[in-house]
Length: 333
Image 1 (tube, one colour):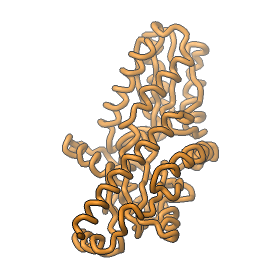
Image 2 (cartoon, helix red, strand yellow):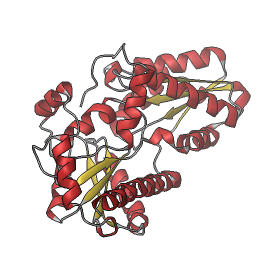
Image 3 (tube, rainbow, N blue to C red):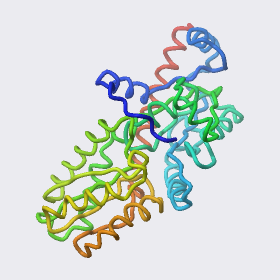
């Protein structure tokens, strides 16, 4: 879905709300129940916590790029056996938020058809955005966001309220993955760090530009500390800049005006030819700076730490679900 207009009134209170919603979102079993009625129904019919059938749903943004989808499906194959080793996990599926199947709705229907009691949804997204705060909760029926609903209708994205209870784990920026991933990739391209600057290129988000800017400023500081490069800056390449090459070119020019060499790093979960080749790669090519610009069209994946993060995020969500289930059992006694 395309990002919404900037939210100038977004405050620290709203940030807390984002984190709260991202941590756990409950979907009442059955459609049309009020929150209190659904809670009462669940109290009387919830299976014992130890017998709940739990599925894990890995959700990524979605792309028309076959190579992008391939990387995410390869990641699924890597993480699935370890997720199935977690006590209580009976199945693992992957879904794409938009552009391609299998969609979130398709996968939730499959979990329902197989009789799952609960689903832990793990978003493979970089940081807070309209996708995490509005779109995914609206798709699964946890939120009524008018902008998201309109975009879903326009883009043919189905909304589905699962019979299973659905919880959403925290986002990727709560792990330390990028704090090791980015320095590793910078070091691989570096020659003389004291004379180099880094350009971090990411998708961006119109509605949460302030939060993305803060997040990437911290990532840049971390890259400088761990690699010894003289400076780091960032720019966007997605809808917020209308997929223009110019922000990337301008960021590279800025680095080259003060340093001998620029290292350009795509901060994108997987490889998509549109971004790594036709936007970032083309920007590098058009600058024609030769060896002064180092660029490899790679992505965050593959990274073993992402697998570990997904495992730990799921393990934490399972523990919370189990605690809630045990508390419900205790109240029924």
